[in-house]
Image (cartoon, rainbow, N blue to C red):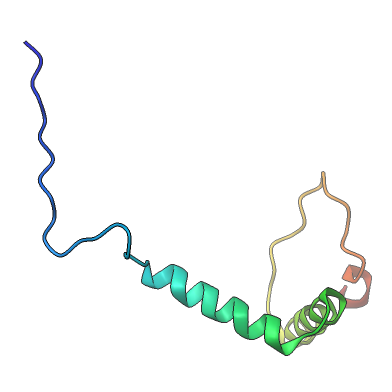
Length: 78
């Protein structure tokens, strides 16, 4: 005889209105970044400049996997 597993509802939990706080924080950050830059190119240039600045300060990054091409801005940093 197969056992029937009964799911007990969790009090005060409504799946229709539940929001994950971690995801909400990610969405907030994404909105702020999108508002700061008008185009993708501006945003990409900002992050490249930020990476170059951080590398000059001594931050270390994982090496690019050998099967991928080098990033276009990688020559500026090495």
